Length: 203
Image 1 (cartoon, rainbow, N blue to C red):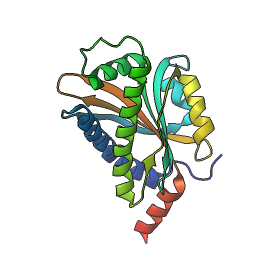
Image 2 (image 1 turned 90 degrees about the vertical axis):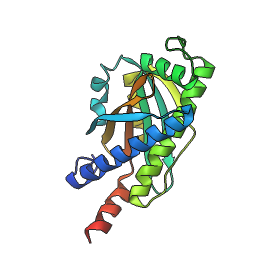
Image 3 (image 1 turned 135 degrees about the vertical axis):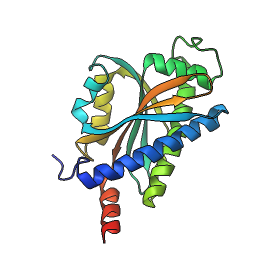
């Protein structure tokens, strides 16, 4: 077990602030990409053990789409955008300016569109979070994964499990001019810069 977890009260307050500012900025990034205003409703921000995540996605065998990125810079960590397959197809149609229902499979073009969206929204997300803390964070190239929730969770455990036993989960609804997309941001941040920030503002 890790000595520090995201469930520390001071960290939870900071993470909630980070999540809301980050998602609002991510919506601005998505709007910039598709050329229209995108509003966002943050449905839920919570901290949970990484091992409990599949239950929140309908079970370990639920088919989901993940866009994974690591964070470089003084704000380290890992981010994954998660959505149901149907939501991913809907997002592709929005990105490619196609009628809803056009995309039926995630082919190369669809995956490329999702990767670009993941990269841009995560960059906007990290810019807001890093700006709040006076740090720097930038995403690595994205990987689009279509698999069962349990398998995608394993990726997060392997890549991010050394940082903390917990995960910050943010559920959001992005509303464009004519359609909406529901997705989740998962973030496993490096705790060291967060705890250093909390120390700096408490002294």
